[in-house]
Image 1 (cartoon, rainbow, N blue to C red):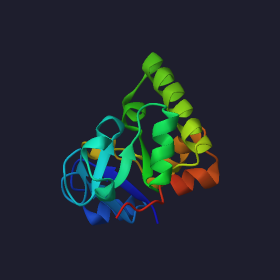
Image 2: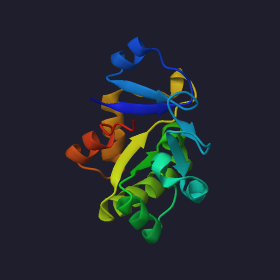
Image 3: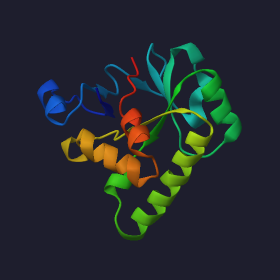
Image 4: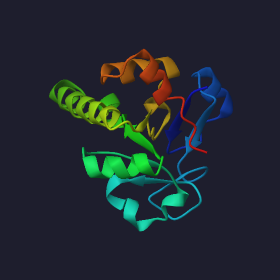
Length: 154
């Protein structure tokens, strides 16, 4: 079963057509950087929330001490691939390099790694197979790629 995260409500039949059990919606099942029961916190805002309410942390930079804290708290580290999906030319190369380095360091730190599109509209959605290929593109092997979209947050 595969999962993704978006900023808009994806109809259940579209999610299934794309190969997902569930596409979580920011503002509905999850909150981004807002106090709630199921929070996804950006790495820079995690300290504002009770760690027990945080279900995942969207990581943007390499910070070994921070990675250790995420691992100790058994939280999911989420890599946002939206910039990679929307990039072209030199921007694509830079974003690929950044995400590959981030993913490799997250795996080295033994984090529960996940990737998500954080799609703002239907054009930003990918199928589960495309997400597996993106995960492999940023350095994960086949098993790690499937695991990265199989982690249920709630």
